[in-house]
Image 1 (cartoon, rainbow, N blue to C red):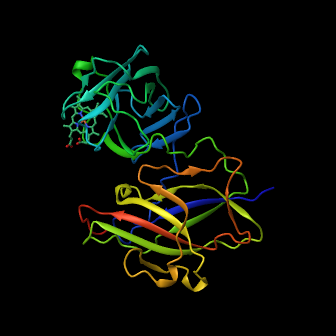
Image 2: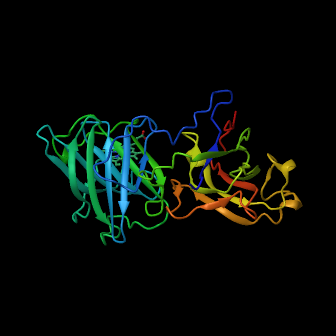
Image 3: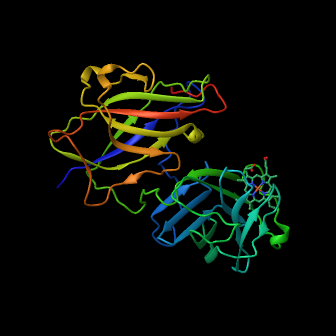
Length: 337
Ligand code: HEM
């Protein structure tokens, strides 16, 4: 049987030096079960109260939200991650089991306005042991100027929820400061499948930016580090990669690229340098891109009949991880243990 490597990237940098790193974004303690198989899922908040599942085809996108509440749920698309202007839906399931749902838009930090054209359609609304489940579909481009066109660009999804059902859409209570948030996501190309089971012999290879402190005196840092591909007795394949980012620091990691570096040697393993500063001359030929990820991406599962070969003659032996950290507010104290 073909052996495989599960290839993952670990970014280790916490906001307080000396605290244990909690780098477990891919660990889902109490992930709810969706009503059907979706290609994508994401925990939107930090404590696992708000989960989003979605799938797309060439014309439509279907979302399913699972939220730990028996009250109302808000979900939407926003270009800047703010509550307004944004394209939102609000829904809840009342004590009789009836689902209420409206396509709305927001114009301020006040209750959303119901769209005159209802283009987000509720497919299912129910309450279960986890909380409230809403499944809804819309066209990628609804042609309503109050709705966002969904493209393969990164977009911010926003969410909110409340513990109580409102009496009507006109009397929505404020969700409160702790029951709202935003996350960058590529809705059309975040292709890490939930349903893809890794083979039992899959191995994980983590690439870590250990001991790196994001500078507070510049908004843009390109940090490079050299890694050696683990030596194995026979050929392996990369079948998945995903970013692992310290919770709370998601907005700081803008993108990464992994290059193969044929001119590196064992002595270079672990070397770090500013990618676009004084780059050691011997790494000038390290330009072949293996993998890339950008903010909003979830990860990538290679197709079942494909993989990126490692450990065969001519395969990459050394890698450069180039990471663009962005720190527009010049925040200090972000670093690895
Ligand atoms: C009656 C309904 C609503 C009211 C009165 C309301 C009010 C507010 C207020 C006052 C804030 C600022 C909070 C702060 O600065 O701490 C806020 C933030 C936020 N709200 Fe709402 N909201 C409502 C519904 C919604 C809905 C349906 C969504 C949809 C997802 C939403 C998403 C957000 C988000 C993501 C934020 C944080 C970003 C920002 O400050 O703009 N809200 N909301």
